[in-house]
Image 1 (cartoon, rainbow, N blue to C red):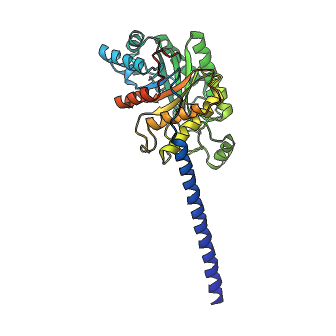
Image 2: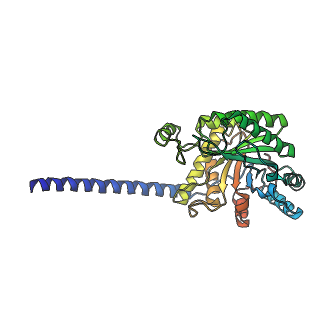
Image 3: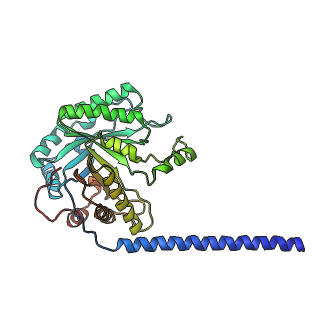
Length: 351
């Protein structure tokens, strides 16, 4: 009986500790949610800026369009003060090539852009799944593959594209082959007087956690530690690219205030880190995210504005948002973008 009593006492104390711990954690979560809600209430002061991007569907280069469709698209770009359009033109094949049939209508697109959206830069949006530990499609560690990627880039520049926009995923901070390709592409685009831009994942919340992720979550199969740019990596990319677009979306946070904090935090941190070095676009979604009730275009734009409000001074280089994506943006979302983001001026933006 005495032994049973001791066991019952131990179990009782353990249950009490578990209860206290659960209550503490719930209280802490409630404080975080309440604090985020209070922070989220004031209306941001910042408005839109000198540069705005748009990721556009592959059909613009892969399918025929009427003159009326080109004209309407040009009007949309001008009305919404888009300075750069990333036209999906790939993806790369495993060997670094892009079959010409995949972008057979690119010449007509470029001609229409010059006529109906003069001054708006049309960039070839090219990328592929990066080979990591034997998994993926394109192996950038192979110099021959990188050479064919450059040949493909040159072909798009020959067609009249104003730049090359890379989106290779995943890219880790220790990816030397990717940095080599960036160096090689920069030589090509600068020689031609064109742009090099790149889409990257959201930066790390804390660089010190990357070694922990790497140790605990090995890069094997479909599971790997997050391919988040560290501060040093982001600065190195910014030194090579004319523009950096941060894919800030897919937040997966449960409330609008927390999702807004995510956008504000990444906007401020990225602009403070590289805003003096290169043009920065903060990606905002118009597709339907997994947690649609928490993350949408309205939350993203408000969060970006709150992040800009938090800066001690504006960056020296142009900055703005990039809308993902052109094919998912409704008329009411474009109207909200104009009313909440664009500057209250009729002057043309400079990119």
